[in-house]
Image (tube, rainbow, N blue to C red; front, side):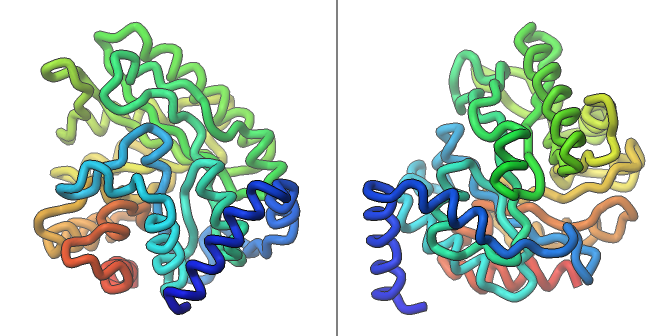
Length: 296
C-alpha cells in the first residue's frame, strides 16, 4: 500500500461517511469471518485501539499521539497487514473505519463496550457502557466484546461497573460470543486512578472477574504482566491474553516478559496497542513482527 493510495482510501472513507452511512452496515455484512477464534496456531495476536474512546490519547511522550485519526488508521492497517496478526479491538467508530477500509476480512474483531470512565475524570471508576452492547456486537458480526473492570473498594461507584460487566458477560454468552474482561484492583493516588500491579492484587482481580455473569463459558481475561505470573495465572482456569500497556522504555524487556508468561497454560496470546502502534523509533511493522515472533 503506497502513501498516496492510502490517502485516497481515507478520502473515500470520509466522503462515504457523509454521503452513504449505510455502507458501514453493508461492509459488516460482507466481511469475511474466520472459522474459529484461535485459528490453527492456537494463539491470538490482537491489536488494541480503543484508548481514544476513553480520552486516553497519549503514547510514549506524546500526549496526543492517538488524536490524529488518519495517522492512527494507517498504523492500524500496517499492523493488521503483518503475518501473524489475528485481529483488532476497537470502539465502534474505529471498527467501522477499518470496515470501510476493507482491513478486517478474515480477522478477529472485538468491540470495546465500556468507555464512560474517562481518563482523569472524577467519575473514572464508574465506567459506564457507552460503546458496543451485546446485541450490536452480534448484529455487526463481531467475535466478542471487551470490558474494563477497575475495582476500587473505597469508591461506591465500583459496584455499578461490576453489575454492568456481569450483565454484559451474560448477554454475550447468550449469543455464544466472547467476553474479554480486563480486571484490576485500583485506588486513587493524588486524585488519579492508579491500578495496583502486585501479584496479590491481580490474583484478587482475576478471581472477581472470573465469577461475573450467569456463565463463564465464553469469558476470557486480559491481564498485565506482573511479578510472579505463575501464581497470578493460577487464580483462574479461564483463557487469558496479555496486555501491552504503555509504550515501554525497554521493548526488549517487555518482549521477554511476554515470552515467559506465554509459557503458562491459560495464556493464549497478546492484546497490544500503543507499544506496537507507536513504538520507539516509529517502525510499526518491526514492532509488530517482534511481538508475533514471541508467540511462536
